[in-house]
Length: 59
Image 1 (tube, rainbow, N blue to C red):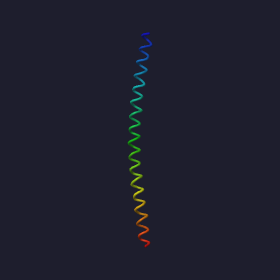
Image 2: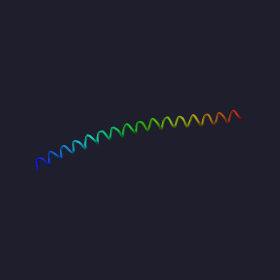
Image 3: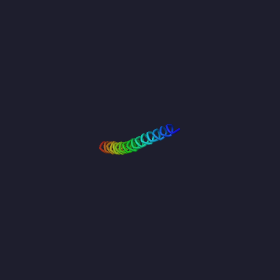
Image 4: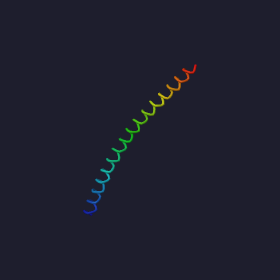
């Protein structure tokens, strides 16, 4: 019984540590994705601006 309790505590501690690491990775990935989305959004705006500028030059 004592061994089972000790094993359970160690397993919970291990799972909690792994959970913390996974949460940190998730937050980092969300942050990275947000930065990439901002870059893509700015690129899209720039491409639209260039497209509009190009059509204005043709006129």
